[in-house]
Structures are given as C-alpha cells and as structure tokens.
Image 1 (cartoon, rainbow, N blue to C red):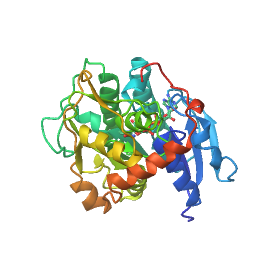
Image 2: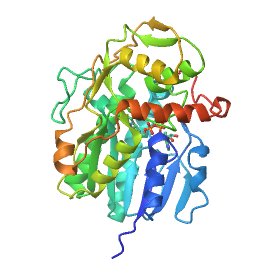
Image 3: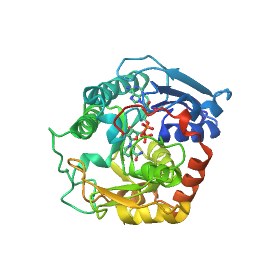
Length: 324
Ligand SMILES: NC(=O)c1ccc[n+]([C@@H]2O[C@H](COP(=O)([O-])OP(=O)(O)OC[C@H]3O[C@@H](n4cnc5c(N)ncnc54)[C@H](O)[C@@H]3O)[C@@H](O)[C@H]2O)c1
C-alpha cells in the first residue's frame, strides 16, 4: 500500500494549519484544507493553491461534510482570547459540533483523527509544570470557558468515540506557540509585543509582567503534530506539546525590544479575568512516546518571527473581531 495519504486539515488556513498543510503537501500527501476564514485569510495558503496535491474548501466545521480521507487533523477553532470571546457560543459550537463532525467522518472512513486541544484545559493550574494526568482548574462560567470547556468537551467526545466506536484518535494539548503567519491582530502576547515594538508604540504588559509562559516555535509544534499522528495506535494521548522553558512576560517584552532594536516604553495594564499566572508543559510523555522535544530556542524563533513581521503589510490583515 502507498504511504501517501489523503489528509484533511480543518482550520488549515490558520497559523498552525497553514504550516501543517505545507509540510504535508511537501511530503507528497493529498491535502484538503478546510476553513471558514474566521481568523485567517487565503494569503496563508496562496502559495499552495497551484500544487496538484492541495485543495482548499471554504466550509464551517460545525456543519457536516462528506469527504473520503485517511487522516484528519482537527485544528478549526479560534485560538486567541480576543477571537474566541467575540462569539463565545459559536466557539463552543466549533469545538463540540466540529469534534462530532470530524469524529463521524473518521468513523465512516475508518480514518485516524487528531484533536488539537490546548493547555487551557488545565485552566489556572494548581500543579506546575502541568503533566497530562493533571485534571485542571477551570472556571466553567468565566469568559474563557467557551474555549476551555469547549476543548475539554471535545476531548471527552474523542475518548468516547474511541471507547464506543473504536475510532483511531489522538489528542494533543498545545501550549503557547508562535511564529511567522500568526495573525498580527490576534491579541496574543508575542504578536502584540512585536507589532507594538515595530510600530514604535509602548508595549502593553498585563499585570506587572511577572506571570510566566512557555513559547514553542511553530516548526517544532508542527513536527510534534505529525509525530503524534504517526505514533503507534495504542498511544492516543492526551500528550502535551510545548516548550518547557519558562519566561516571564516582562522577559519576553525585553527580548522583543532587544531584537527589534526598538526603544519603546513598557506600560502596565490590569490583568484580564482568569488569566493564568503560570504555564509550563511537562513533556515527559512526548519525549518518551514521540521522541519529541522542541529544538528552536526563543531568541532564534523570535528573530525569525520579527523578520516575517517586518515583511508584511498590516493593512492586508483585517482584525477578525473588535476584541483585540
Ligand atoms: N497557537 C497556539 O498557541 C495554540 C495553543 C493551543 C491550542 N491551539 C489550537 O490549535 C489550533 C490552531 O490554532 P492557531 O493558533 O493556528 O489559530 P488560528 O486562529 O490561526 O487558526 C484556526 C483556524 O480555524 C479556522 N476556523 C475557526 N472556526 C472555524 C469553523 N467554525 N469552521 C472552519 N474553520 C474555522 C480559522 O479561520 C483559522 O483559520 C486551534 O484549534 C487552537 O485551539 C493553538
């Protein structure tokens, strides 16, 4: 049997999805990129449109669709707080109905299906760093719940389809990932800082900047997604994918200033509701089962991301929501 596969990537025009599509197309697979362009634009995949093994479908994952595929990467979901809080009910529907639709397709086609879950399932964690066995500390009625609880419900659906219908599933919990092609108006800390620094604006720190995050470069992350899809069927996850090196938000801001050569001021603003104070993945499982660990240090990844930000015309990027 040929090792070339028909692969569906939902959310395939997004930041991570477009890189995943690119890698899979380069490997020779037949790739279907499905997206409703809520937080992305065609320009992310324009360079793939002429390739005979790439197909772009404008579709909303909350609605059923019939395709014949061997593998599905389910990435469709707004990922940045300003995006997912814009229409929280739709966010929940995207996670839950989207999961039901891709799982139904996987069951019908006997396809493998991978869910892009998130470190947000751990909420504001009481255990640090977070192993997959930690069940999380999520506020189910807060403004972030549409995303956190939507992703948690999707994980439940994935596990139940595995137990009840023997669907071949995989769950990855993605921690903060950055890199070229992230939406410049997504309101996430890396894109905010770079856009503000290059624009000569003051850099906004929420709180005093002492909260910590870990930052994974997109190439490492995409590599982890593919390794998980190719892992032995017995290992379905959930598995954490992220960079375990931890930085304070203030350290990140200072590094962005150094690498951009800009001399903007740092301005403190109040912390958003339910903003986690620390986040760092325990990647023991990923190292053991996938032989995966991040290879790109923050300084190097940020340098590449800043280079990309310097090349783009911000007027070509529409803020998808007023909440950025
Ligand atoms: N980037 C990160 O740091 C990170 C962290 C944790 C989890 N994730 C997960 O990874 C996935 C990709 O995230 P990203 O950073 O590339 O975000 P992104 O916003 O760039 O990509 C999401 C894509 O999904 C599409 N989409 C949204 N709703 C849809 C719908 N109803 N139907 C079809 N398409 C829809 C968007 O238009 C976009 O192209 C998401 O599921 C996200 O939750 C990302």
